Length: 379
Image (cartoon, rainbow, N blue to C red; front, side, top):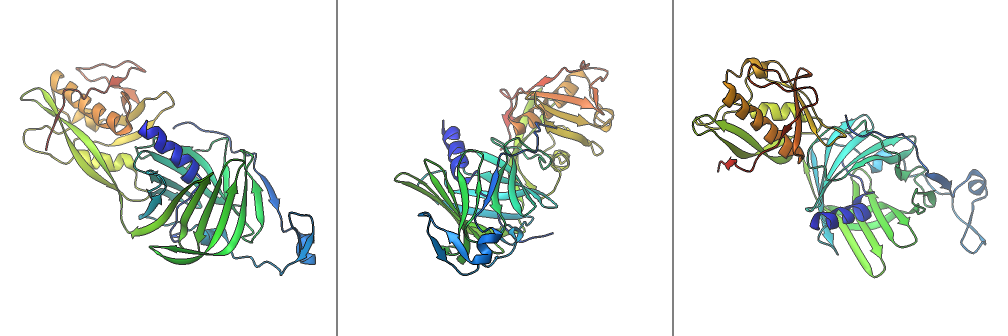
């Protein structure tokens, strides 16, 4: 229930929020389509006459509206930065943000609010900042930059001037309501771009500061107000995940595991980092699982709910184990990968072929089951 509540808060409050920073430069897929409709309240005819239409239908003279620049300036991308937001009004309003992958004008952001972890893929293109893909309960790290869903969402749109408005798929609308809003946070005082999202039931106000990014969000629902405020920026740091690595003990025929902090820097390949970590010895009692030349060729969560891991031939050739010990080694790999992805079925192949060692033969499509119930933790 706690995870459900946390995910709900993430969706209504931070699901449309993006990261910040300074510009540095095989799963479900969907069509790149959208029902978003653009309404620019500052059309050429209105600008030429310096008139805008107010809610009562009367016209009022206004000064020409200055364009503040580009979205890239208010939504810069930076590698290896950890953003920490402090919340108020809900236990899940606090969260931290890390950029898993950056390629060109696309970024994959990982948001953890203490109850759930959510991944968003954002794209800067055509004068828009668009959320093109979202995956909830994404506790594992996997490159999803090429994924797109049918329901995409425009978070920012140029021109960055007061009054720029666009409609959302859910019937709400999003408007730039201020270009110099005063915002005070623990990281500094800003004159921020204020973007207001309104629906029939609630309202969200996001504040973006130049060369920083999102600095504050306010969600209003009736008398309820939930805020998330940027409190700290840590630069040149990795994402750290605690992973349980499982190892066989040939002496007592039991499997042990050790919880180890693994560092992932932006754009590092998860399978390679895990493979190198698995090669490091734990103690003299436990056998090695990955040999020096073992590599993970591919690793991903498939649509069928299974994790697919493909190892190279060195894994089998350099194992040098009898039937019983080989089974323990394979079970250790399955437990490690399956638990990391939080699934109970792992499809393990060798150079894209079913495992067919002299001791254990697996048919095409046959998978291993995660079995951790009798494993012993190494303190």
